[in-house]
Image (tube, rainbow, N blue to C red; front, side, top):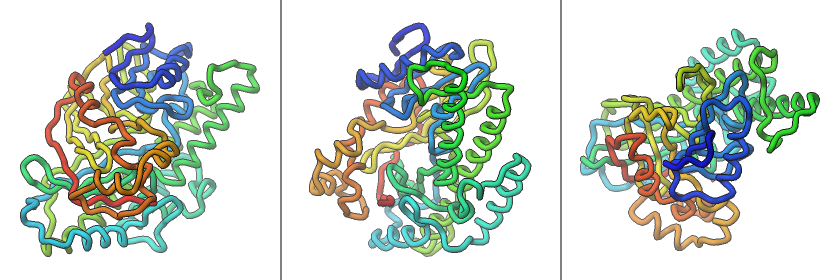
Length: 388
């Protein structure tokens, strides 16, 4: 832990100067209380740093939640052992790829029965919140149960005892992105009209007690619920695919769910604040969580230690060390194949920007997080599914 200034504390041993400078800009906002906590995986983001925990009084910064509202992880521990899996993991991967639409702009053509129930619930929630999701994305309902691209993934893993886990990462998809973009734009327009100067335009904020703040909060909460339902729907499909592969029922011995792009009201240092975790998870004492590595590295099932200085938070993953553009220019397909040796994955140049070397070493991130979480299980990939 390193105190950068009175409003910024850093847990990252590997961090670029530009990332620290970005976080310092946010820490100077007058409504930060008591300080921003930079997680071990911190790296540059839009306005607010990815891997930061931002407590605010009387205001919310839409870009401090991010454009993938409610993005997070889900994992299920099954009753199966890796030694019980028959050969032919390619078939399992391709069946998952058929069951879950992948890539940006790839959605369902029809709703499953379970998705229909979830969509009906979300539609009712949106009506109570006073908005129509279709005003942001006409096909929002068909987005439920879809993965997306970038660092989103579905994996079949095994833990240190050989037990098989099903593991995935995704958020609120296109509808959440458009909700976020709209409210970032509204906040920027309000700040401009009021003649307020900010260190970064993307740190534009909405003040509590205004109609704009209330509208953002209602739609933010809806998008967070959409993201949870999206992960649940995908997990149901992955469980079904895995059950067909092993030729028997799948028992859920444990399920863990966590957001890592979201806002909640919490009490810290004696005051109630809006706590925005942008690339960070809730690590309050006893709270379970998930911290994935890159597509070829270990991931972790953890439990929070409740570190008050870290605002009861921990990292959400490995954190990028190379931009996507730089990774594509730096690494080769052969290096990707070497990094993914022993893991069933779709061998394509499309994943060069997701090569493990483009991320911080997850063992360094977890070492930096030693006072934030305890490791319960270490997961290693057997199968990796991603969108182009």
